[in-house]
Amino acid sequence: MWTSVKVEVPVQAVGVVIGRQGSNIRLIQDSTNTRIKFSDGEENGKRMCAILGLPENVRLARQLIMKAVDEQPVVEVSEVKVPNMAISRIIGRNGDTVRSISHSTGVKVTVVKEEDFTTSPSSSEDMRRIILKGSKEQIEAAKIQLLEKVAEAEEYRQKISESASKMSLRFRGRQGTQDSESSLGSNGGVHQEVLSSSSTDKFIEAYVSAVNSATHFWLQVVSPRAIDLDKLVTEMTEYYSNEENRELHELEKVTVDSIVAAKFPHDDSWYRGRVCSFSHNEEDPRQNQVTVYYVDFGDTETIQMNTVCELRTDFLKLGFQAIECFLANINPESAQSEEAADMFEELTYASQWKSVMVRVIGYQQQGITTIPCVQIIDTNGPMDIDVAKELVKRGLASFDRDPS
Image 1 (tube, rainbow, N blue to C red):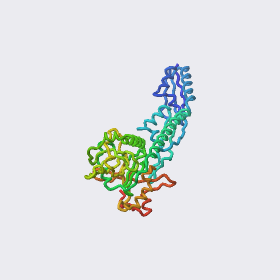
Image 2: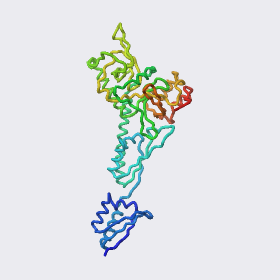
Image 3: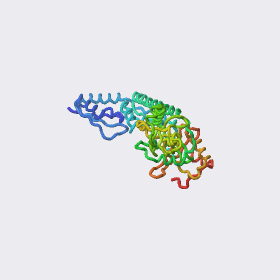
């Protein structure tokens, strides 16, 4: 004679009893020759489970269900704090890494969104919260993987820092107005680095690599590309320091906007450059000069023709790193003095390879090129300093009437 029994199952244990895609509940039904159905609603944190079958089979099915409830892992919630700079490595491309951690450990991983800053960026030392939900063992396994990603991020950041320390203090003479024009030329198919951020506050860590004025300058993004650029400069310098290689790549003719290998006169290293102009010396061709815009730094130098060579094509794989920018919300006419430019260099650690935080506020059109207008915040000291506001405070600049 068939009978029916109802069993109360805690809501948090229903998933364990049912199993993935109903596998566990089907196993219990098949092994006990019973029919089991859960009610749709819940009451007092419990759902009703109805078991239908022969009395003996119903009792066995009930025992199996209660065993599954009793043996279910205790779900815990744990919070882990990790450095903000490690978040991108933890999340991975399109979230692949965090999904992999969740899948391999069975833990629900939630990266808490950072606060949306309106005037000041979160520094690289800020911590982000990650919420882990699962059994104690699962959470511990997830923590191990998260710490591995943090260690990887710290190791990579150390390499970036080492690459920056190898960069020489570049000569900070004022860049001429032709530099902007030269930087707007064709890239010859080479990718130009851009300012983009996936963080909520939209701030980007960057170096100020060259300065024309307090409102016109060039940035390098602090990223793994900094390591790639360091390797590129090392390889180019080693290659072009060899006289035979220079003869092999000797320039027969110089054309404006052509991409070349150019020696930097202040550190004897070789860099990628774009030809801005060419000066021919009729009396002594050895004194021919070339004005070169260094595409990875933003500065411009006039150098001897014999220190410029054809660029080996494989040295074009890395995108050009110098990004031309304007300082947002400042009237450029009000900040053209040498004193303003000197103060801007001091506030932004120009060419010293010490990073600041930048955020794109808008864009300015120059010819066919759109140049970003950025806010710059120095977060290296105890107090964040907005560079534009500091220039105005010191009487070296004035705000634009229409910041947009």
